Length: 262
Image (cartoon, rainbow, N blue to C red):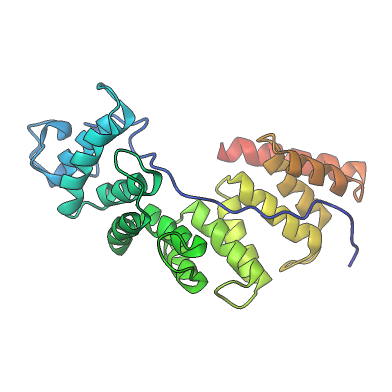
């Protein structure tokens, strides 16, 4: 197997941050409408967990009101105590980041765990991060793998990346490059630049897959579209092992891929 001096880096996702509702009309969340009385807008139903959550979301994002994390926390707590999984995730996030409340990893874990137990992928992922980093809880790679796996199977991109990385490094599981490639590929195919870089590295090194500079260039090129300097450098280094025709074909496929999935 040929060795070339490309940059050997692998990237890890950190916490998932709340994004629910940033571009959403709070009164048009279709999957939530059947849960409450339809005659009132969701944000006005403050005695219901869904309405309480969405009311808190308004304050969290500053949508139509002055952004106020303490007020957001108050409404998320009302909703979370009634079992609303998204509210529980936000409570965990706010404790982890110290938004509206003093930073408290133990409380963050408590709420992430509640959300995770209900199948909330963001809660599962962030709980995995807490276990991997030993934040508010003893470091435990096996538990990190467990929660990343649950979130990854629900399609969470960062969980797929981090699960792949733990298989790559053999932390919490037996080292398995093929399994690492499997999870990297799932995230990379969803357009995640970090994982596209990691997958390119696997092809460049021939780990878990046959060494393939064409595939390595293709994935590095996709990651490079975000402006990532490491991806750009590795793509350019890999190009020295390819013909001009191969480079042009890989670039064409990358453009077609981008047009299809953007």
